[in-house]
Image 1 (spheres, rainbow, N blue to C red):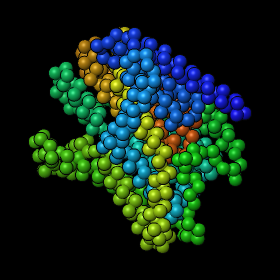
Image 2 (image 1 turned 120 degrees about the vertical axis):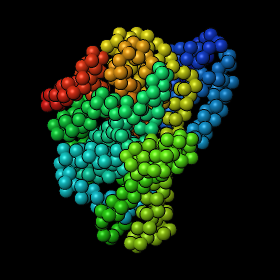
Image 3 (image 1 turned 90 degrees about the horizontal axis):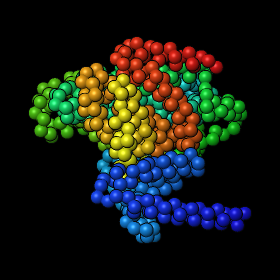
Image 4 (image 1 turned 90 degrees about the vertical axis):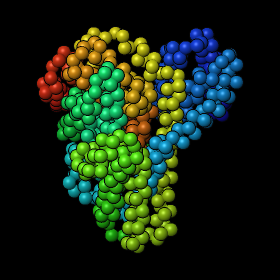
Length: 564
């Protein structure tokens, strides 16, 4: 047994050395003096492909991301065939990349708010609030159908941020789903499918500021001064994937129709005995946390901290944007904030200018304080015990922070080697007019899947898409459809990607094995994306209006769902 292990280790080391040598050979023979996307060519796809492939093969997310980052840094570090020197430089650069990601204010805010929300969840659980809320929901969600529909409804309620959605809805609905023998994989899918797809089309969310700014800048590049918000609103009916995935959840819940690996996961869940523990990702699971013995269960011990988190986040979003605008130089916005701060336009502009990561951290900190105070005042926990449990909840989320840092680092090194630029360069020139919206949707999906970021994909593609669409067909309706393709394709690819932060958080929030979540979800996402293309973007490329395309797509979706 020991010999076999040594042989396997030796083989892995030997293969790795050969791979790095061959990679060095290709890179050193590549032309110099050009940007990395041209220098590396198809090799720019290696880091994300290696990370994704290893994730599926080994089911070790951290190892897979680590290797992907290392390979990317190795490519940047290669200057000759001395692979030892290149490997050392790559390792050092990798450390710098991870520290740089941690030092980024946005990333730091996301990690901190995840840790704090983990602490809040543990406190709610110890106070019995989670069990009381689960029992209350279980009375209404007394069947798998109702439970899935209620999960989607809760996801729609937390419309303002995809991260908050994953971390709030998952822990609330997990015990309900477990009791009804619905698989963790299905819960993770519903949570993930109501995160970015909802936040991406919500007119008040942490996404809208970026989306509107990219749209405005894209139109400015072709000499047009438009309302970014107005264009955004016009793209909503053409956000076919976002709309159809939400409808698909309803169809799947009502018909209980499953296919692919999800069907097997649901069969295993239904066959599970009542006292049999549910398989979960133990490193990020709250399953072992139980309420303090002998306490009276109350739903308010869950509702109040969660309400503080949600309402506090909305207030923090507004205040962050309000102070940012007043400290800026846009006199029109400053005048709006001073004269009509609570008007629709005032609220919208404030939320658009907010720093979501800081706002969510502030809200999570306030919710943590409220939860600690509630536990102490009700004499459920002493102040020392409450703080200890709060910190214990944060420890549960540490593994998620590590995964997020590696995912962001992979995104950084992918940007350094030019993966997205390479994909855009090879695909953008083969464009019949009618197929351009579909091509943009697919290109956005590929970049987002490979890089694990919707925001990055939108930022890369939008400045290219609007001028390209206008040059191909100078019709505003056509440009709007293509703009929708960028926003929606980025969300679809991100939804499928195992290195996406929202996918990771959905796995963590539901205590589902991450690769099992990705493996089961991707079949559903591709199915809905196919319908979006065939009955959405291709017809839209021919000028067929959305009010014809969407009903047809829904009918097809329903008819396929009813075929059991």
